[in-house]
Image (cartoon, rainbow, N blue to C red; front, side, top):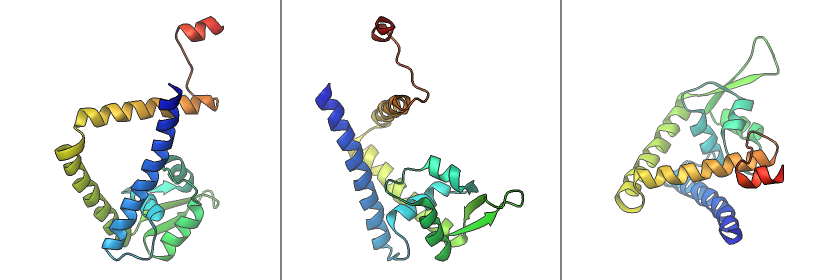
Length: 161
């Protein structure tokens, strides 16, 4: 169990880095040089919504990333528009500009190509759903380890009480 646990931790990290490289390759292929892969993922996660910076941070997985800095760069390069709340001047919401929606559509196309190839060569929908379920259980477990929503149940937990 220990080896499998440590292996999946390393695999999750590698998968995340590898996926960011895939996004970088797509940006390079399209000769997009005014944002990086993490900024592209932030942009994609905004989608058609208008989000606060806090909502965006919670929603995304931006390892080693300063979301505020990246939003500033996305705004400077015309990918997003920021609006201050009239009720709380400290609160800022972001939404995609026309340029941002264009890049979001390009990333959606990339994901569409990936889905077709996955179904054809790698994983079927059931296998992908099973992988999602396992990863979501790990996420809940780790959140619980920090004192959040997860509570261990079953014989081992009741024996410890």
